[in-house]
Length: 294
Image (cartoon, rainbow, N blue to C red; front, side):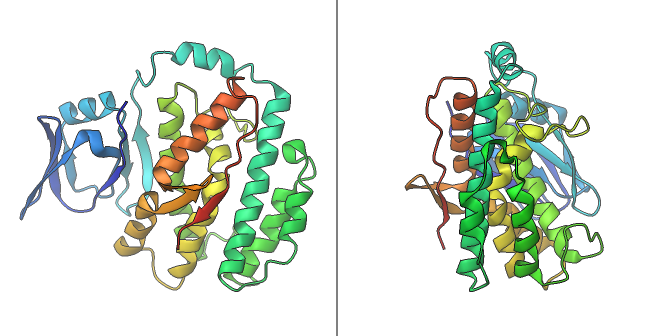
């Protein structure tokens, strides 16, 4: 099994094709060649790039996530292959019958880790983290008391200012957050698809209009990584440099369960452990202690 680790971002007019197991990117000034086995995500962040059908087909065979952006550089769609895992039918059959006690226990853990990571970020930035440890300690199975929402109401105003809300579409900070979250969502969807499961069937997110319910569930513990970067660039417009910084978070080194890993590989580890637990292959809940290596 290959260990792809690179996120390739295309930002200018070019032609992209496939040659001898390499992605070949030809611009007016240069030719770059990247081993396809190294690539986990290809983000085409411009409408001025041309990619051959043969190249797309070969990328899909290697399970590379291909994401397309609009003329503003915002992700609008992606391509998934049909044959991500030979055991896909068996995995999906398990997925639709996941045990409710296991889904509730896993969601409890996800919310606990998300609140823990939110509090840690506030503390790292010398901001007020009062109340987060107490909230984390009182998360019930399935988060039946909705501690996640309580934490969010405390967290975002402390991080981005008292008047900030996630519902304010005119606030540029939300554009930064949404862009970063979309990139993370796509990366997690790739891991889920690679494991042979559907992204549409989640454990907490169950919207019929959301094609990425399960990715939405699993990405919760990773959101503070995006939040940290957005905090650092919060006073800047969402332009090429800021978008690249958000995309490059996938290559950052974090500590997960006591060992160092890139964010992309940590996502793969979290996805595998979650699916093993939900499918009964793993008896105990994972730990998922995630620390930013800064």
